[in-house]
Image (cartoon, rainbow, N blue to C red):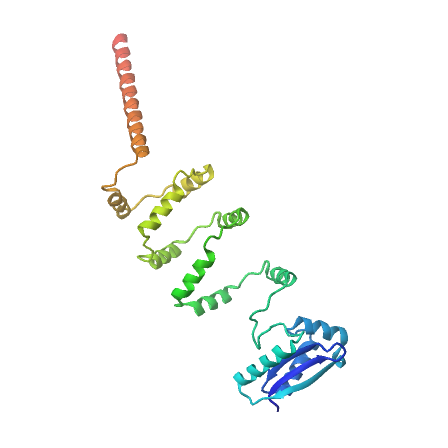
Length: 275
């Protein structure tokens, strides 16, 4: 068995495919099998093979190389750079690096994945494989930089909204999320200020108000939660808007009380007149 770099060449046009293997003869057989089964990774070579047939191609060894992976790849890369083979879809030996998918190819992949749902078994395997894995600081920073300034379109927001409508976490899931996030996310003062500024003067739609009302209907705060809210508000000056709202509520309550008292007095007066 030979080890080295080989070429598959279309005799008439001279177009080539360059590869390497520790078992060249076996690799040629594997290429023939995949091409005849219409399953080759190089779609360009596959199309040419389907059009012209196996007899139109010639297989030959470019250079015999000791069966050392690094040396094989280095020599394969040398011949790719020298010959610029038209049937190789990747410009780097044994790597998809630098290759670009066509719009047609992207559309085909999108169409194939559309409506595809991952089975519960596959989800469980993915979950088990990723359990305990944490992104490095560099990876987090890279992801953050990539998403910075990215705005989600109205259409996408609407789709997300529809997908989440009526969705409620189970008690078990809530407990898990609570344990995971406990003490994990502490917002900086700068972050809090940014959030406050982004929501300031932002009116809530009637739909959102109704959704919040329905979500909180019948829900009562625990004593611990009340204590936390009380402690959070302690020493904080109320905004002019809140002061005005509280004062208006007190006035309305007082007026209602006076009305009730007057009505009661009139009732007593009428009762005294008839007796």
